Length: 303
Image 1 (cartoon, rainbow, N blue to C red):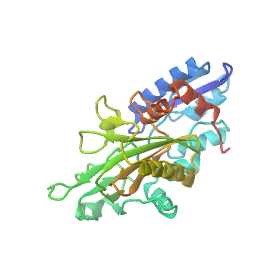
Image 2 (spheres, helix red, strand yellow):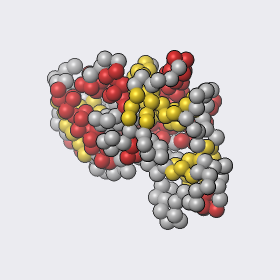
Image 3 (cartoon, helix red, strand yellow):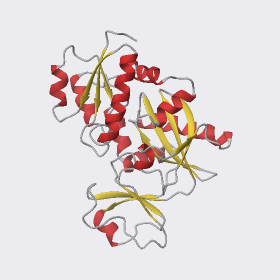
Image 4 (cartoon, rainbow, N blue to C red):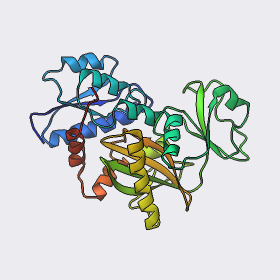
């Protein structure tokens, strides 16, 4: 670690996950200062490119603490590539692939990782009838953190959304609901850290369950057979490599007692006090300050 290295921490932005990003960014900024870095925290607006070029001294590295669209879908990554500033987490292509659920599922299937049966459907066709047998899940095809996720169950007298209440575009992802346990694995470089089981009293591990105090309980290590633990770790690393991720990612799975089904890979995992990656890092003996310093020291650019 170097006290001469200047790190710009990007947070906030204007996605549906702005508030969580601000909490992540504040925690990261504090930890990096503790580690001896010079830190500039930036609440990202649309002029962030111009702002970064005006900063003095010029940032040596960007810590990307943005979540959601524009922050983890390749947009900010492309801008930072053009500015030739190394940044944490995955590059443009891996970020875009991970956020595009239909494409990432196709790649996972080709790599031999099980995914739930799914279909990409228009808003109109979804309103006209069920695209899959119930129960199934409806979610935006390019959002993160369970934003906009709905579960349609047998016997529900409900629709996925009202005609004018779906703000996530003209298409959605429908996928079969896999009963079972919610597992997640963090990958740091090429190293899986641990397997956590996520328990929640809510209908599923939704946005509030992820970020609200008491919204979920994490069991680490997950109390599952050793063979399932080893397989979840193997698949998380395989998914990380399949998308071309770098730095830290987190793979989410459903485990039905026999098979593991990957839900998604998060290339910008949360760094809040209740987040899973810092918790798994602590489980293997790594302090939060050392985790964020590692991420800065392994920052890269595709530029």
